[in-house]
Each structure stands twice: as structure tokens, then as C-alpha cells.
Image (cartoon, rainbow, N blue to C red; front, side, top):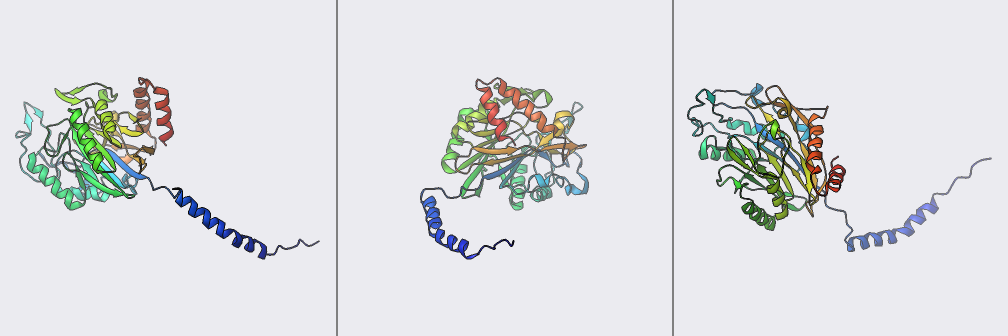
Length: 367
């Protein structure tokens, strides 16, 4: 027996009859504030960058740096803010006040001088901002810093440090990034060692902008310094600050994301009062002049999504990067940096009074 075919008229009439109620429901939702939420603010952050030097003799990467970031650029693509820590000035100045004699008593004096044209390499990789509040930015004095700021401006990249605040308009919100360091305070360095002064600066920024990103350069260096603690740190006779106290004070004052640089190795990540703190992003691209053995050769890209209304971290990822010989970054499918990060973060949180809850939150947001 043949199956009876359904008439198409009845469903159409039913749909037409429902349209007014569907439209009214949509209007009610808007009136009740149930419209679609704003898209997340997406930030990609990496660690230390030094693209080669011409001081005291030229040590520059292959193809004049054209391939430095080629394999890792996809990890930075599609983000609203892309930020790293630029170690050393972009300048052609002939003399370094830091190292008038490149070798003293047989020991090298480390001052970096990267060709100004290499700012284009940062732009090609997708960087929107770089932190210049660190201990190598003044390797060629204030004039070298001014040269650096000029070439970054020309390349469309914001310098982050002290009075140089990078401001982006994202999803209808203003996002400001500011740079702090333990090093000598200049117009381009906000204080890390003076936590109360830092707190006031962050609070002022929060009163002016919707979201605040704090980039800091502090803490001891190398593999022995991987495990961060709530304590003052020292390296080679320099006071490097209590970075846990500093980072949490920044969040208490209004910071929505805190990014650490300086130790040249990965350090723990935590979520504190809903905000993400990365205590050290490690090395990212450090051509020829840096140690890249062991954990110093493991970096990562912090890919974070922030709530545009509260600044709270919604989710984040940490794809691993390995620095091949001479310090050029490549994606690391084995995930060594991320495995190390998770271990260090677990150890760091173990000493917290609410360790179980803090670990659960971190695990839930860490995708």
C-alpha cells in the first residue's frame, strides 16, 4: 500500500502563526539584558626575545632574520593583543656606556644591539606590543632606548614600559598594557621593588582603562630559579624583588592579566582572584647569545581569553615551543614546556591554604 504524502501547507501555516510570539520573545530577551555576550578579549604572550646582535661583533640569524618566527607565527595569529619581552635596543649607535670594554678581566660584558630593521620581523610575526622595561633596554643608553621607541613606532608596534602605555580598543573595551622592572627607574620603567608605588600606578591605570595588563621583569635567573616563592629574590648581587607579592598586589589593585619575564626559564602559572598570573614565560627567541640548554630552551605561548566585562580569565592554553640550537623557536608537539609548567604550578599551589580549590580552578581553565 502506498504511503500517504504529507501536505507542505500545514507546517508553513504553523510557522507563520508562531512568528509573532518568537519575535516578542526575542524582544523580551533584549529588554531583560539577555543579548549575546561580547566576544572574549584574546591575548597571546611570549617570553624573552633577542633577535641577534651586532655588538661587539655581528652575530645575526640566517636570512637576516626572515625565518626567526616563521614556524611559530601561527601560534600568534588571530589575537587582539600579542606581546613579548624585547631584550636589548634596536639601534646602530657605536658605543655602549654599559660595556665600554666588551671584555673585562677576560669576562664578557653583555650588551645587545639589534639592527633597527629587525622591528619589521616583529611586525611580520604579529606582535602588537613589546615590553622594554628590562635590564637590557639601556645597553646603549637613553639614546639607544629612544632609537628603539622610534623604530617600534614606525613599525606599528607599541612599546610597553613606564610611561609608555600600550592601549588597544578591543570588543568595545580599552585594554592598557604597562611595564614594570626591578632595574633602574627611568621614564620607561615602572617600579617592581616598590610594591606600594606599583599598586598605586595600577590602580590609576584601572581608573582610566577597562582592562589592565601588567608586564614585569623580575626574579632570579636560570634553572635553579624555576620554582617561584613568595620571597625576595637576588641574582648576581642585584635585588630582583618578590614577584609573588608584586603580582598579587597588581591584581588587588586592578590588573586583569600579569605576565612575568626575566628568569629565562618557565615558572608557575596561577589564577588569583579570577585573574591569570604567569610568573615567567621563559625564553621565546634568543639568537646565539643566551643559554638554551635544559629548561632555558623550553618556551611557550600563553593564549588567554579574558571576559571583557570583568577581566577574569575564561580559558587559556600554553602550546609548547622548543628553541633549537642558537635559540630559534619551533612548535614542540611533545609538549615539554607545558608538562613542566603544570608540574611547577602544582608544586607552587601545594603550599597555598586553599590548594585544592586553586588547583581545580586552574585545571578547569587550562585547556
